[in-house]
Length: 196
Image (cartoon, rainbow, N blue to C red):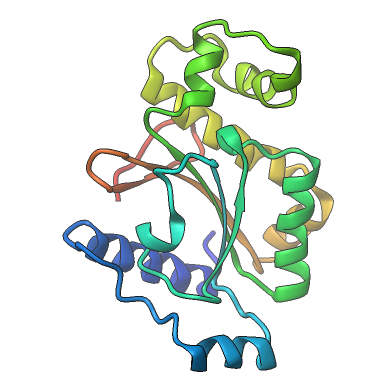
């Protein structure tokens, strides 16, 4: 079930992505007046986007959103570990955000590293979660999808988030950003994909 406010947020995000596909520059409002208003009135983002730190993945541009519209949590491999989960819970509970989107992407370096067997103890907090999520998958794009879906499932294990989703106050979903085309593909929770 998609929460009404979350549906509105998804619609706005997908409309923004459609505009992004043909855009050469972003027309988002970054004016001094908006910055002052956000300072004085606080933020009211429409969605939490948990995504990769990859420099090619910029949610504000991908969805053509301006200041104050998205609460972005970035970490290599878009994994949901303690700090990322805490950030999501903060945005949902304290800012009233109705939508959490885990945004994976094609050609993810973190997923590629796991698939190629790269081992580095300092990367274990990322790579162990990714390895568990992709379960030996050999197709990179499919592995990127599985990884994003696994992060949504980890978020669904958080009591505060699960309670809000069960009460119809929160929607959590996964999507895949195609680096080359700029297109967003919504992923279904059955570990398959549905193009949006």
